[in-house]
Length: 323
Ligand code: SF4
Image (cartoon, rainbow, N blue to C red; front, side, top):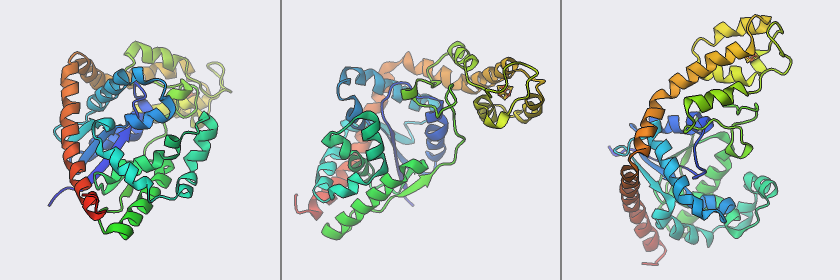
């Protein structure tokens, strides 16, 4: 029996961080044995905000590819590729743009939020979720691993697939969201970890850099010195202890009574986190030392992706009488 298909992707923002790793990459690695995976680096999506930073793109794409591989994605099991190397995404996006009412795009929650937050008002930005629909449907994917915030995008993809199928005949399955459960990863300021907040710990950080960042990490603001009782439940350091320290419960009481100081608590976390990332960092260093190997994997991944996307576009053109 052929495997079900999964499409997933991330923007080439540069170095991926612990939030990306725990929230997505680890999950993709776990799925690659069971599914036919297409793992994309979505550089066209990055243009919506960074259209004036394209000279940075080659390095940023390379870094994300390295992070994908270092995290454990296996190019023998999944196709790892760059979105702009598979032009079929763009063709399908254009065709979808002819059958998608503009209000469908305007009502995607992230459109209003982000256009206000980032001041984006381009045609490409409005069409971003439709390009995402094309990314998914060009592989006729069955599942897309996402967080809850992405559900409206998957719903739009399903609506577009339905509309196409109604107009031209059944070509697309309606993909389902594969919701991933993962622990929230706070940044060093306690907010959600994000490159744009400058609060991230990246997969490229050395153990020393990670230590320096964690030493600065926010804690319970009421616990100013050892002896003050702390509240682990609201402490971002403890949130990371829960992910990286299997003995985290042993710290709960000493923190609450004040017996444990934040400096010592952080020392434990630094050690545990660096241990957890040791293998990934070793693979990263190996990959950085062999850039041609990484580029070869992206080329091979794009070839495989083009095969599947090309088959879809033959079906699409036939259905639309454009062949
Ligand atoms: S001791 Fe640890 S868990 Fe408690 S407040 Fe300090 S850093 Fe947070």
